[in-house]
Length: 152
Image (tube, rainbow, N blue to C red):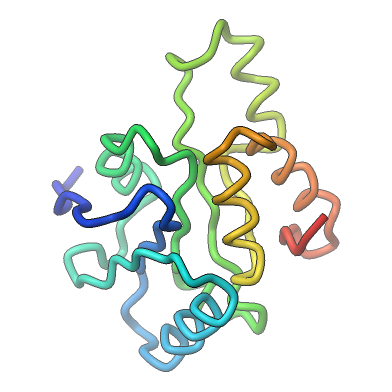
C-alpha cells in the first residue's frame, strides 16, 4: 500500500472530497461545480498523488482526523455518471464499536454508498453532530433503484 499525503487545512465543518480519478477533467469540473452549488463548506483534495487511491488507502490517511465521520470520493463512477454520485465512505472502525454485533448493525448496508452532490452537506453535517448514523443513510441509498442516496 502506498503512502498518501496528509490532509491539512480542513476545517471541522468542511466536508472532505477526495478526487481519485484523473482521466476526465471535464467530469471533475461538473462534480466540483455541483458540490459548490449545494455545499459552501467543502475541502477538496485535488492532487495527482491520490490518483487511483483505493478506499483503504484513503481511510488510512483520513482516519487521523478524529472529527471526520465520512469522506467522499470522486472516483471514476462519479465522473461518468449523470448524477455525479460520489462514494460516501464511513471512517468507523470495528475498534470504535462495543462489539462485533454493534459493528455489524452499524454497517448492515455496508461501509460505502453513492450520494448525489446535493446530499453531501446533509450527510456530513448530521454525521458530524451525531444526529443520524451512517447506517441510516446507507439504508436509504439501499432503497433507491440505483443505490444512490438522494435525500430523506
